[in-house]
Image (cartoon, rainbow, N blue to C red; front, side, top):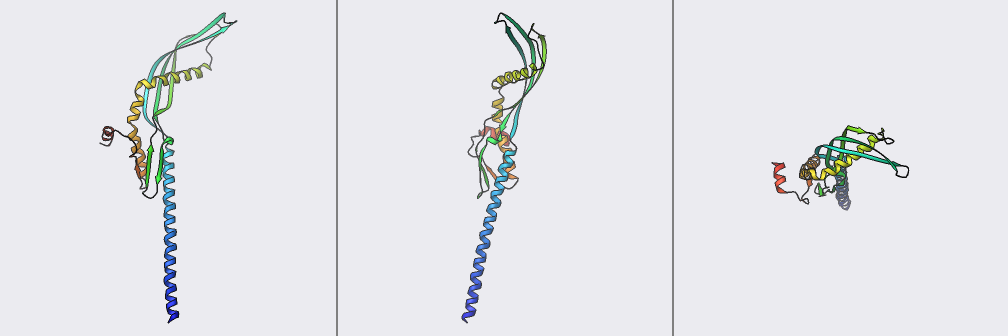
Length: 207
């Protein structure tokens, strides 16, 4: 009788230990899977990298002048040109600057901070008019590189007064909603309650 009882007790204890070990490894595997999911998801969001939300067209007339002096500044030579700049400026967000972390228990990506809009690119096209070369100061092929840099600088200075940055800030919610869609693709949720989003803009975009 004692042998039967001992055998039964051994089977019960063995079953309990087996169940405990199975549950432990199952939870560990699920946690590892969830952690892996969150890592993949964060990398997926970061892989978008830079998102253009606003594009602006500029048409500017730029007067370029360059003066060279020789013989202890006794003689100078000036080259100049009238340059028409047609440029596209792209304003948007560098998504690598987003501050967020994953809550694996609640399967949430928590968005803590959203970056400010910035100039992502300026693409100028130059047309030259009224080109005048100096006696020992004439235009050379390398001047095109210099003029492109000058054109970009000129457009960059014009952007703050163009209203493009303000427009990009208003488009921030659309970017957040895009991230939310990416998060939902694997059954997670995006928590962006920490961000201050004007209710008017939210209704406009969601409505």
